[in-house]
Length: 286
Image (cartoon, rainbow, N blue to C red; front, side):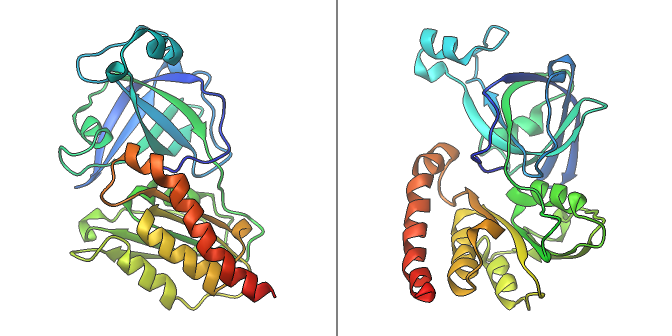
């Protein structure tokens, strides 16, 4: 899963054909899209590129080419598509293949069950890509933190690190069966944290707090469940005083909320966090 970042392309609709489906772990499914519809698709500037997949309600189909304005004008609201945002795990421009990884937890949700049942030859439309983050080659070191929803972006970012760049990556998953092989040209210490029955993100917050930060300016990527992201933002911003310019930090999802509910309240959630930060940061400056 991915966050909705400010840097985005025009809302051009791309139509992708499912080429391959692979189960990477018990709860992670990889879907590779290809086909002529991706001829004009471009990505690569960022390692947190995302696309917004468009899911039609059951029994509803749309004429092609897809026209969202016409759909919203001509069809009742209950027949409008639902969007879900997912990180681009990899874009192979030569093969014209777009790789997306999905967390799957049974029949709950929308995109996960789709990835579990979709088969090669089926098609899906999407907007994008958007994106805003890539590892800064001038950074003193890199910190990457996230749960399963941030794993595709973390994996893509590790592959983009400059050769020998120092980095720590903390990734929380349900258990050891959810670990994946990750490659990087950097000097990376990857720490897999197994959640077990603990709350989501609890082990991530503890691990980052216990880390003896290397010297030099950090460039940090912290994404996943909004509760632990908020806690780590407070630690990095308020306690350590790290400037926002050195942080890519946001909640991809929120425990107990579906995607629509989280997106509708995310702006207010972020505003409250900014207000909480303002007073202690102002005090430090004075």
